[in-house]
Length: 222
DNA sequence: ACCCAGGGTCATA
DNA sequence: TATGACCATGGG
Image 1: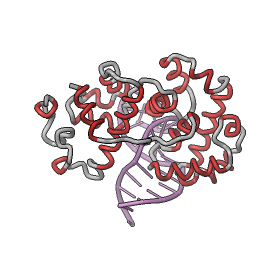
Image 2: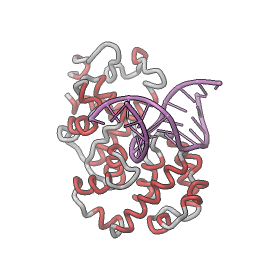
Image 3: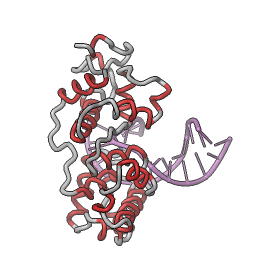
Image 4: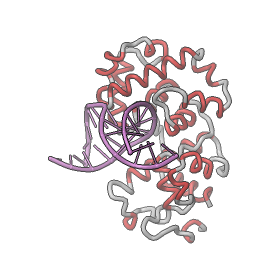
């Protein structure tokens, strides 16, 4: 069931360089900046950081937060995110760099990420999937909504992040790239088709999203 | 003028 | 443990 649903969703959205970045650290920075923020606003902030050669842990960790405020202003929540970026960069340098961290197994790396100020479950998994190339399913808000509408997750578990991740991640056969494509497809689906008012009666992919009419069992078996 | 975005933290009950 | 305020800019 889940495999078919995911495959159809991925096939429906061609994703090319959905998360653009020149380095792994830039992915991690983007993961912080994009919290509750549109990517277009994040891109400008990243461009400014690049302009000032701050897209590496060593430089960013010693940059005064007051200066970061100005550079990342377009991404919103400046003071909050400036602090989070510094804590991220500091954690990386204190840990011996990204190469050392990349040597950790995924569960250990996830725990370490969650211990950093400003990194919650979703951000941690996004970093694991797109920054550290781990085979991790990002069970973000859109994903949980999608799982719920597909009837693939019980209603109580819809709010449970780890439960939603574990519904997909162990079942889905595929590489890290598949997980990236799936997450991108879920977000694009939510943004392009089901927003702002998710009336999926006009959804071009009505077989994928069955809001209002309950789980569509028949649509998954074809 | 209003709503919300590719969340997380912190204070309160 | 479970909600809610808060961050704050930019696009619709």
